[in-house]
Amino acid sequence: MQLSVRTRFLLWAYAALVLIFLVGPLFVVVPVSFSANEFAEFPPVSYSTQWYGSYFHDPTWRDATIRSVKLGLTVTFVSLLCGGGVALALARFRIPFRGLIRVLAMTPLIVPTIIVALAVYSQYVDFHLVGSFWGLVAAHTILALPYVVLLLTNGLQQIDEVYEEASSVMGAGRLTTLRRVVLPMLAPSFVAAAVFAFVTSWDEVVMVLFLGGRMTTLPLKMFTYLQTGVTPTIAAVSTMLIALVMVLFIASTAWTRFRRTA
Amino acid sequence: MALTTLDTTSPGPSVEIRSSRNFASYGFGLIAVAPAMVLIGLLFAYPLGRLIVHSFSQPTWSVTNYDNVLTDPTTWRIMKITLFIALESMGLCLILGYPIAFAIASLTPVRARLVLAVVLFPFWTSILARMYAWEIILSQNGAVVSVLHHFGVTQPPNLLYNRVSVLLGMTHYLLPFMILALYSTMITIDRSVCEASSSLGASSLQTFLRVYFPLSLPGVFTGGLLVFILALGFYVTPATLGGPRDTTIAIYIQQRVNELEFGQATAMAVILLVVVSLLFFVYDRFLGFERLLRQGG
Image (cartoon, rainbow over all chains, first blue to last red):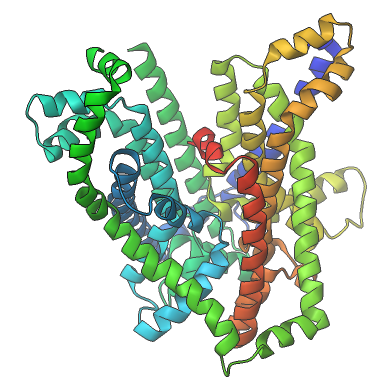
């Protein structure tokens, strides 16, 4: 379809506005985080780094951050282990109830988290698991599993089984083939799955709200701050989170560029 | 290479080899899925089943919980609010998302990847940071109000903790999903069909309306239903950007739990679960939700 110059211009002008709508708000928090005032205002009248100071000197913020990192990493590890098994079985092995297993591994993606949180909460109350770190790990793993299974199954399906057959023809056992042939080829999908799993836990607040007990994670602390009145400390935290994503984003883009040219 | 040709040309022996391998892999498969299935069974399937049973059995076997929820005009209003917020944010996502997805789909793959990276940037950013950003933009000390001041508006409208702020926050959260859904359908559309249409004398508007748009409809349905399902159960945005008049089903469930009214909370949760499952069934019939994530990853 040949678009006229004017249509094309209008289309891209509209697209640019939508992109600004998507990305622009994120950068509004940056100047606010450097505000010297007691409350959040945009644009700030004078600047300081006090809110970064109040984040780094407040042990509750620090604890919440450390807990979130630990939780995220543990969830990543557990979900890669569990999800990797499911992906392997779905893509390579013959298993009974294949369809059911697929559906079970995927449905946590569709059921609203609030419902899962409520259901798991009433079970955790019975088992005294509310407020336990491993209880949260298990709950977040459920949410992360669908992404891991999807990404790893897709990754495995793109790898030709010929390599595995070659490996076994040459006398390698199943585990050796898995370790030395399949896993190295699957590395890009593994990284993608790990990122999805980590972010799922890192950004999750509803499960923590229900199951965390007295435990606070970084998102939960931000959530309570947002609900109770806003000090610019959260602007400092948000700015650092956005900067972090940006750095990782640029790094991953540069990395894929590098790999394509290398 | 030799092995693949062997596999395709002479299926006989290769099937035999496979089946003898598969006999052993039956056990491997079960061991491989066991941890995940135990976890999902204990922490997803069983609790959800229990939730459904409890919604009827607690405190005694009856439909009292549903009766309480469904005869209360307040809960009907809450369901209506949830439905409207979901429909409105779906509509906004379509209006904002369709043109940009169309524009991205017309780019070369390398450039498309670049623009998609920008689209996905908020998707990777902390949702709470995003909600906070909207609070700053819409608050009385915020960006919009200061711009309005600049233009001489001394009595700025209240922009925060109402339907406007909820819809902005929801649309901001959901739009990347919509764009991905539309884009993944649009890149599969064969451009030569459009060329055929214009070479047969159709104007570009006619070509768009009668050829391109109908072909992009699967993406519209997929994106729309996905966004609608996500919006129905969403908690964070209405909780942070909404006011008392924007109480959605998710907020209602959380509030009932806080007040230890588990009966009403579970009944409402089951109602939402049934609605979402039905919608998902329709959704899966259309395209399946997996092709979406392939783009997202």
